[in-house]
Image (tube, rainbow, N blue to C red; front, side, top):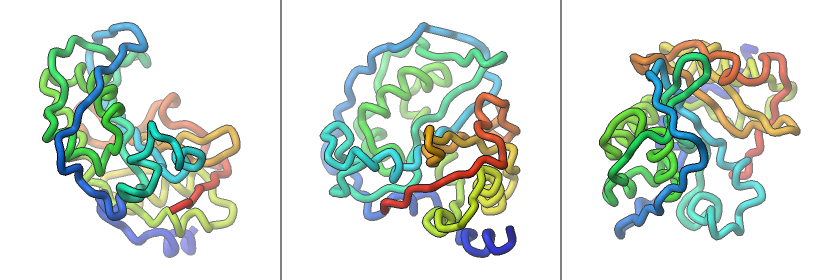
Length: 231
């Protein structure tokens, strides 16, 4: 494990996860998110910051018009990006699709595009999740950005080259790079073939790291993990 840590622990600021990303110069037009589930208004007991490993997401989407900004390489290349900040509720019943009268402002959306490089995703995550946290969509993006920029990242390119890499290794390396985080606070999502697709960072209602429940924790620590580089 010591050799693995020496290999991977070159912490980087969160924005280093977007290589040569360009903030859009013109206004961002957000689509109207279509509700894809029931309205559920429950007390917020914590939060999940869901992060997508973009090389895996874009692996077969380089030519997708829908995902051109994130996957084409023309607007930058991305490592981890924000999928969304999700409020959690008791008993696994998270709040969603709360009433919302406004969209994020074009300025706030443009400023988030290196963190969350998909206008449709920004609109969806605000409408489904952010609306249950605050009545102000720009506040949702601002809080998401504060959490995102607080993170420091091991070198996942180097980590991907480690033989016998496990879910526990990934969790521990991330925790070692980030003060106040423990491995149990870090959830992972793997594809059916064991490739890393997402990281789920678990927070309490006070926005401090907390242990993930089983639903968010994901595969056991001894599960083998592969990381697609593709950068």
